[in-house]
Image 1 (spheres, rainbow, N blue to C red):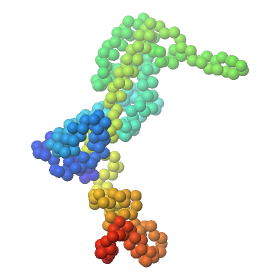
Image 2: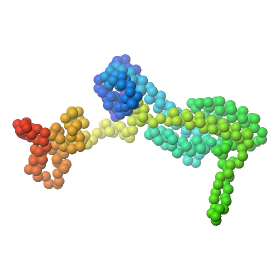
Image 3: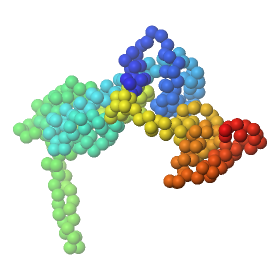
Image 4: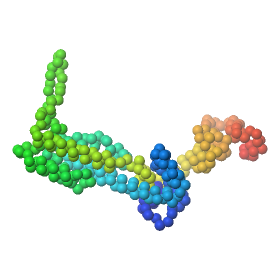
Length: 327
């Protein structure tokens, strides 16, 4: 809470009174809020944009609704990550990702469409009917759509199959062989797929249904937290948030204030000097920046001349004001 004061809104989602005025101002300065405004502008929803910027009561309603939607999305992300971990444990892949690794990738938005997910889908498509049965039974209680229906269809398909050998899909390497041919003294390798039985064809269709169901679920659940509305309230990426607050760096703060006074003063006159010195900057800030540009030995006369030149650039017609400011 110390490193992220706005997180108090996540603890009390339904306050009985209005927020403080500073809270609305902080929300309007969040990066996710600005991105949301840009989306509304692209959709030409100018009325909503106006109300979000001018109406604090309407903004509070959107804040509460946005927090709940983002919470739900994050909860779904955690459930999907746990499901992916369970699937990998069931498949017993050689390159299984540990739960901490999957969690970190999920929270940074790197898990979706990653090699980890793609390798898991590939292993699922190659499962035999026995392995697929174990997998579907393990994830029967998961939020994956049609999980129970797929289990019933697989059991029915296995019961209707003659023979003791398990069913294999078209993706299984059991149905694929390599052929070597020599053409012009060069060896060429080609893949050859054996013809599938009717039972294997039916099983292949069911495997494709499982694959599509899992892909559809993970595509919707593996969201990027940094793209959620008001994600700054719910998540943070500081390694040591308390240390940043209780052990601050005053030297860095002072140097930044002297280098970029516009960030602290909030005035419009300093914006013109964003990438250099400006006569509108405070005298202390000008002297500090001139000091940084000087060498090991500072010539006071040159320093004074440079300082006087800067402050007199935009107010050359009022010598009295210049003299007063320099003194």
